[in-house]
Image (cartoon, rainbow, N blue to C red; front, side, top):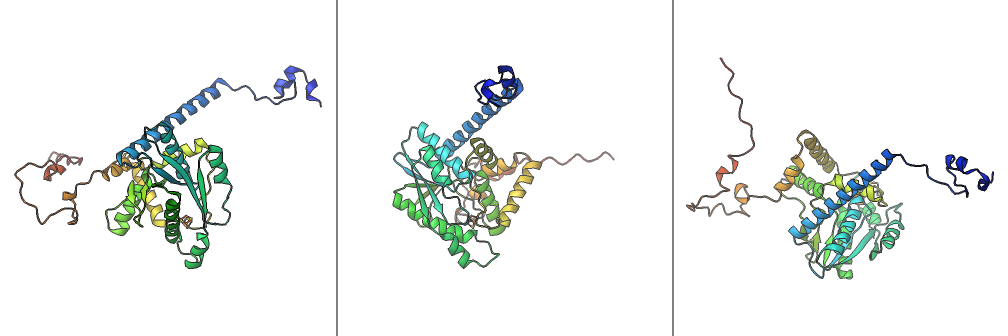
Length: 320
Ligand code: SF4
């Protein structure tokens, strides 16, 4: 039927304008309210992420005037968020710095090569795609069924450090967040017997690059929500067919369970990483226990530190 001849009332009811064009059905007040609410929540979330990123960058002196920051982009939610946050800071911060996004195409089967270049071009972000078949190397060297992540990450790190030098980058930005940092802390504690996490800023193991983690203060859930709202073209991270590290998975479940039973525990544990009292640990390398002498001066961090520990008082004895 020729839609140009449909009477206007029937056309509207059928979702067709008199000229034949499709029209959307009118949205209810409730739907409009929900849309406005969700847009408002989205802006609030973005504001919080930008604030936390800015805070971490400032607290740890991650970016300086004139820096050229290489943003490592894997195509996962964290790296897209990282790039977006740094672009926002670049536009707003009083500092002047350059950004260059870098993706390492490791030649994993099924890797959609066009996704990142298309996205970066559309966003007008300068970028470089480095192609290196680390996938074959890992497959050749690691026996079937064994975890490949550790060799894969080592190879990837080496390539990225080299590329940073070639691109004249002064900082390498990675998308690790609060929960990666805390998870690494517990992994080291439970399985490595060390108090060690994942620092927000460090010198790379080849000694030539400074690595920064601007999302250090941001919880993973917030990043996941943000990535969903922004509709980032996510590239799945299981293309290599590797199983997730079981220990890391166990830690993640443990932290989630704690948080469910004791809300606030994750944030508290995370804050503890930035409040260390070396004199109350046992590492002779960071505190001179042998040289300890009375000072005659009261120490607020002395033994009284535990007097206010939030331990509930024992219940009063039951009456006889
Ligand atoms: S999941 Fe695959 S690509 Fe990622 S580090 Fe492990 S082996 Fe490499």
